[in-house]
Length: 115
Image (cartoon, rainbow, N blue to C red; front, side, top):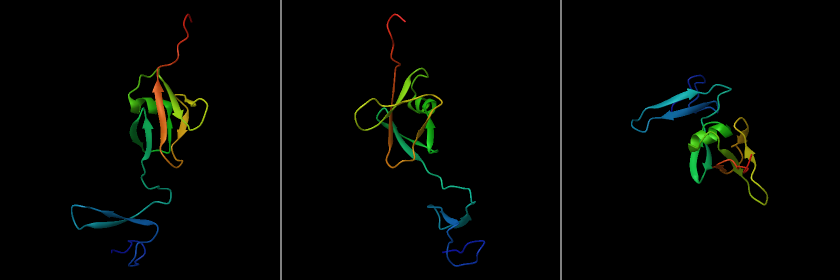
């Protein structure tokens, strides 16, 4: 194991990570920035299909884009239990960070005859 570039220790410190190239024996020790967060994809399901999103929050408009739903459609976040699933507006955010995979549906907007 290589040592950190900044500490000289034979071990990797908590502020570093090891980049491993699976096609060679090269390993590179890199220091993370204090405000840098490890890359993570958040999982979500839209209309029964799984997607990955790089941020812990997503807008209703982004959900429709991922699902390739028309822009005038409505997004609902599926929640367990009785009652209606909340609607997520185009500029509203849904939180993807809680444990588990958040689920959404897109649908045509409800129409009122004669209006």
